Amino acid sequence: MRLLTFLLPLALLISVGAAPFIAEAKSAPKSKTNERPTQVRDGLAEARLIDIYRLIGDGRTRDALKRAEQLVADYPHFQLAQLVLGDLLSTRSRPIQNMGDVPAGLAQAGSQNLQALRAEAQLRIAAIKERPPIDSIPSQFVALSRRNKHAIAVDTAKARLYLFKNTATGTRLLADYYISVGKAGVSKDVEGDQRTPLGVYFITSKLDPKNLKDLYGSGALPVNYPNVLDLRRGKTGGGIWLHGTPSTQFTRAPQATDGCVAVANPDLTRIIETVEIRTTPVLIGKNFKWVRSTGASSERQAFRDILQTWARAKKRGQESALMEFYASDFSAEGRDLDQFSAGLRAEVAKLGKRAVRLNDVSLIRWTDEADIMVATFGEVLAGNKTGRTVRQYWQQRNNVWKIIYEGAIG
Image 1 (cartoon, rainbow, N blue to C red):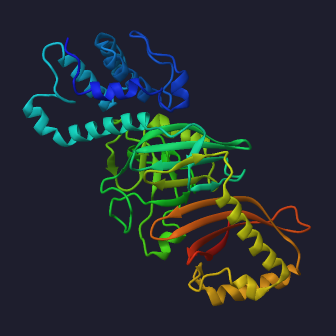
Image 2 (tube, helix red, strand yellow; image 1 turned 30 degrees about the vertical axis):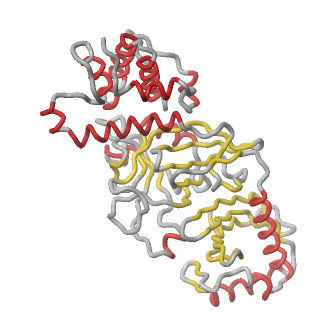
Image 3 (tube, rainbow, N blue to C red; image 1 turned 90 degrees about the vertical axis):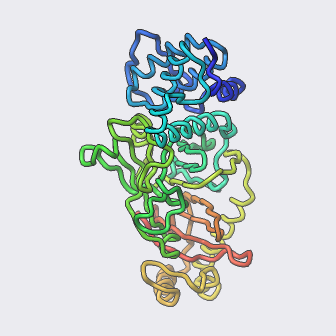
């Protein structure tokens, strides 16, 4: 039997790496040929596919074929698994030159789907080989507070969603999953452009699959696109969700949605059962820089100092010093800086120079044509046990941070 020449380079890449970066998949028992899994678990199908690639890389194509047959039996709508199985079967009678090496007529008829499956395979393999370092997070997560029990980062360049758990000892990766984005790619600007937005968002609700079309699979998690920055830039549209896949598809092509982020239904179910609405940030970007989650951050401390200086100016009733923090083009809920400052002046007078304590500070940085810091924190007055939650958008201008938006949330 000839080794699959198209899979060998991919399999060798995996063979020098570690197991898929998916918590459940590491400990999941391998499926036996005549045994069906007791449950559909997130990440398990991909882990089994990667195991098949490894067997091919080791020259164990008979074992690979058995595993592929079982994988397809367990996940009949997993098209990439079907493709691998078809090629493994074909090696019994002829050499295979590339993935999906079907007769010319069939290849031409299904060329678009075949190209998408090849792209999906390459993205899955790359994500396993080039996984982030252990105990690391995207650098955009400058500070996650205890209220951010979980966080999500979507790397659209790698077609990967990373799910994190935030604890007192640091932020750790729970699992990561293959995803699909907009048909026209990313960087959404206008309604209907079929692009996935890039930026810092938050989950706003959880939608029951019973009330959704089959297209959305096991449910949906809407995010707050367009956010404050998007609105300032004139971006339009809405209805951007993290959602599942139709019952006829295990996964979708890398670019197949109308702008949402789609993941396999078992993966989405895990995400839905894990995250919280309103407090879970969803970072959507490209090619993240990864940093240690427990490392000291001068950026984190520097910005916290800025926030404390802002809070002290508010406590002291120093109106001129306080207004220095706000950009001249500040806007919030239809109010410009003059209108906002009038309300702020009344608020400061009401404080009576009581101390303003900031707690649960979350800082998420977003950098494109501008450098933005999304700061969320609890604002508690001296003598009070609770207070309001404030979200500010700061923009760096001429090396000075200025507030371009401020509002209470929750």
